[in-house]
Length: 171
Image (cartoon, rainbow, N blue to C red):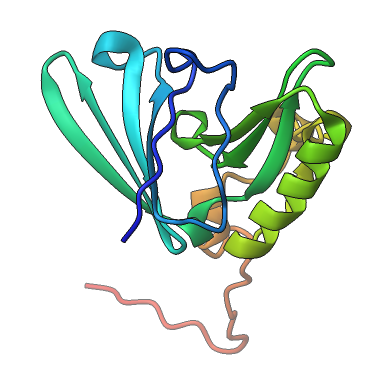
């Protein structure tokens, strides 16, 4: 089993390259920037079917094992100077950087390869639409409360009335 190491945020000595992982040589183990972790770094193991994130927070060591199918897709983030290819998770702290580059052709090629290897969609984060507004709860104020909807209304029921002789009990 081959391993590839890289650093995110800090370039290796004598190298002008930033984070650049080879998708065809998985599993990969590398360090990435994590603002919540001790030392601001976390160690990431990237496999075809899972991702293991290791970090220490206030001296407590933790390892988080996440299936690749739990990620939402592969997205391109950043500005014109340097863009990052990221494996996106619903929880932003579990997202994993895959490639940092300024070359658009290289990013587009890597984006397609990473997406195909993990069988995840390519997400365009720049074209993201804002979420639809939620309905306000006071818009339906006249309606009965939810827990009362399960009950039958007692007043609305009509009681059966028998017509005829009235029976009265007397002493």
